[in-house]
Image 1 (cartoon, protein in one colour):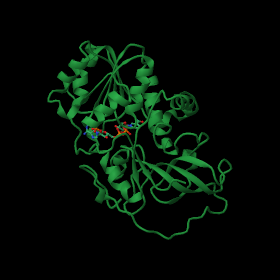
Image 2 (cartoon, protein in one colour):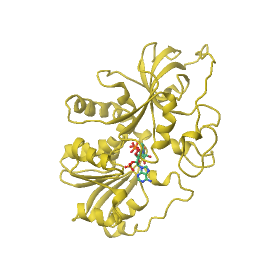
Image 3 (cartoon, helix red, strand yellow):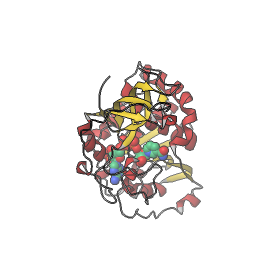
Image 4 (cartoon, helix red, strand yellow):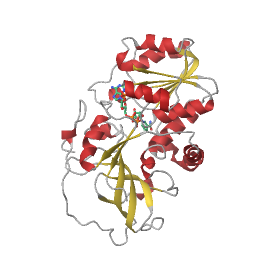
Length: 334
Ligand code: NDP
């Protein structure tokens, strides 16, 4: 990161790639691991880390002039940790660099299933997958036949929430920001309906069109005007899982929400959640999702950027909707 980015969309030029010849080594007696980074994950929460430490975020701010960090898939080259050995594949918090010395090993997961694309551990089999899983099954308390709406539906989390909801027998509608994404939702992920929110002058009217009887479950990824439109289209006992509000992350002042009173009228529940608090459920999640992938019951679309250099635009692109599916950066393939 060049310098903190307080307001506005992050840009490729807010970051830079530099050569460094420092030789990394696991210090004697340390339980750190030295890894070769393979795939890096671009995630919306990283916007918060570009702000100075005075702005609350759930992870520390990036340090200008130092490599940024994020989730990724890596291969262990050397280890002082009893649970990791040379050759192991892991996913977790690593650096945006070719090689990293990871000392926060408690955040690392060992990868045991390698008969799926390794990049999936940045997405469907990693943090975004877990987010879809706990957000949908735990927070939304879904039931067969319910009417489900998902915003940013073609992204890393949304595409999976929609497919979980379809597998349960729900009616599922998603919103996304381009025709290509809307087609993906309907034709690849099997959503019942989808619309381009950028082409809807009245979001509430659009939701009424797709949900004449109202929404039972809203999986919230964007916030702002979309949330307000959902609040006036809820069914009795609607549940809103507040996963993220990406439309607000780059604003100086978050937009106001006007229709909260409807929560009372509709006896609705709106609940935020943070995926790191659910990682103990990771094995149970894998047991559900791996067979779905292998049996072709769930598909996952990735947007692959080749090389660290292209990662900067890829990360910035999350906030303008450039990515189609889960945004991954390939540093090396093995
Ligand atoms: P995505 O892969 O969906 O990428 C972000 C997408 O957000 C873009 O492609 C774009 O799609 C959409 N977007 C960007 N800006 C706006 C805007 N102003 N208004 C509406 N949509 C916008 O990201 P993820 O699936 O990884 O994340 C989805 C949400 O989940 C985010 O809000 C994220 O912060 C949150 N999250 C929360 C977690 C938790 O623990 N609570 C964990 C992981 C993610 P489009 O073209 O459709 O506009």
